[in-house]
Length: 143
Image (cartoon, rainbow, N blue to C red):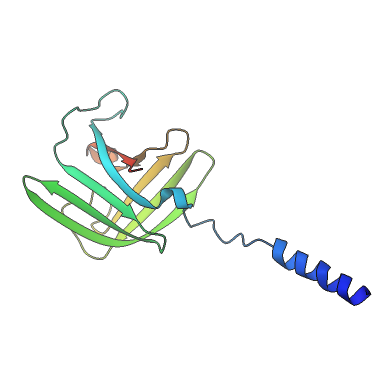
């Protein structure tokens, strides 16, 4: 009887153990399609432009791959790569690494890397391109 009790305790302890190796993986809520909804100059809340100069979207997959698509002047450009995630209490940062250079990569420091972030309280996805005079681009998740 003690052996059965010991086996039950061992089984419960094995099942209750958790894997804390998810610090660089997004939760399921970040997976999916994010579309460009607002453009701005410096403050996304104060300087939104009603008419978007182009259409754009990111799709984040659960295997840490992504794709970015832009439609501008009737031309569609699509690129892809891998991403990593760093979470803090205030925001979730994405580092995107593209397979090749492209004109649709909005970055101040690299031709194949791009950084995005979600302000957790707001829930929208923002670019960091405005740090070097690019536009503020704001994306919302398609539900």
